Image 1 (cartoon, rainbow, N blue to C red):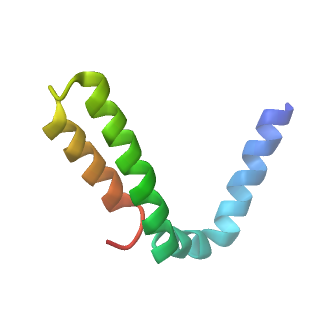
Image 2: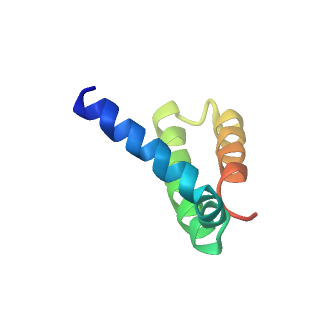
Length: 72
């Protein structure tokens, strides 16, 4: 196995041992605040780049991603 395979295996093992804690962290208030900030910044950037042509699609994608991380 190469270094990448070893790292991937270790990451998988770490996740399996700690998945409850990881899931709790992803649903925390802190994760919600961070994800909101990042998602808002990315959405604003995408709106500027597209000239507002796809604002509804961008907001929909932003909201879907927000629903997957945090607690709101």
